Amino acid sequence: MKLKRTMLAAGLMALAGGLGALAQQGTQPGSTQPGSTQPGSTQPPTRYPGRETTPTQPGRDMQPGRDRDMNQPPGLTRMPPGQEKVTQSDLDRVSGSWPQASKTALREITQKYGLPTTATPIMAVWQNNGPWKYTIVYGTEVQHSFPAPHTDVLEQFIDFKVPVDKVGDLAQFDGSLIVARTPGLLAAWCDKEGNNFAAINLANEIITGKTTVEEARQKMAQEASNVKEGRTTTYSSGFMFEPEHGRAGDPDTPVTGTPGMNNPNRTPGQPGSPTMPGSPRPGSTEPGSPPSNPRPGEPTNPGSTDPNNPR
Image (tube, rainbow, N blue to C red; front, side):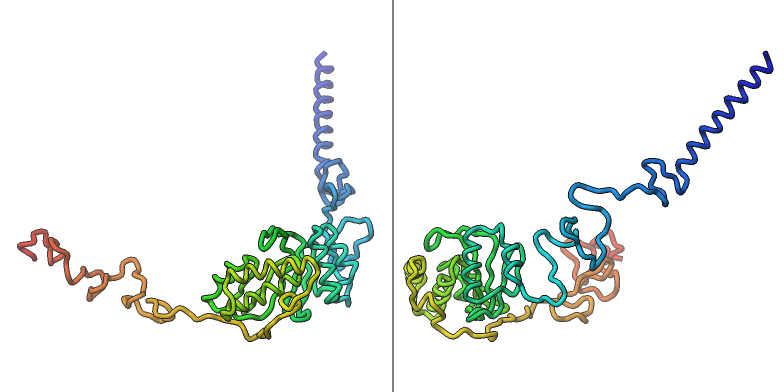
């Protein structure tokens, strides 16, 4: 009986040792146990819905139907090497979801000036097209009720130096006129190019004193009606003045005369210099000394406690 108990105990110990070895084997390199992440694992790369976590290699050609390059924004395709111009297919693809007003402006500007310089899912941009320095057609609309309800989608810029005292007048005339004083740009933002011509021509008349803000608003309503009905006038067909072509910038001037400005080598204690912790207060003659003119009721000697008997 004693021998049987001894043999049984030995068998249980051997079984326990075998289970421990099996458990340890699952964590060794080269293990193919499910869930193992050690080198040598044949488990396929994890996939998330709609894209692969394996990094895209630079320059790798994406096959049709494969997940797109995750470093590239939706709806925008890299141009093949050597292709520098936007194609009509590029333009159709990026503008597919644009509102109708944006698509109409895009078609009209493209028919007149050709394909844009740049096209993205949010805008198409032309440079130096006709009389304009920049033209932008946006893929989103902005509601505008002057001179009649419409949406602003077409923004066009020229070189124009707006006097500072006239900026407010232009804002009262048309809230979609945009003044960029530093580079010297004036832009009109509407739905039709004819309306942009009219808005900038009337802005020039406000600046030169030829018309008032209220007169310009009435004239703009008439011109917008003409554009809508297809009637062309001198206000809506081009500029009635000569744009300044790059000579309109205003870099402004630096602020001067402020204490501490434009004097990087000033010394402590001078006007405009910050007082550092532990530094003497103005009027002192040595570090840590009290002010030379004590306040009423203070002892003249810092060690005295009796104002009538200073030490």
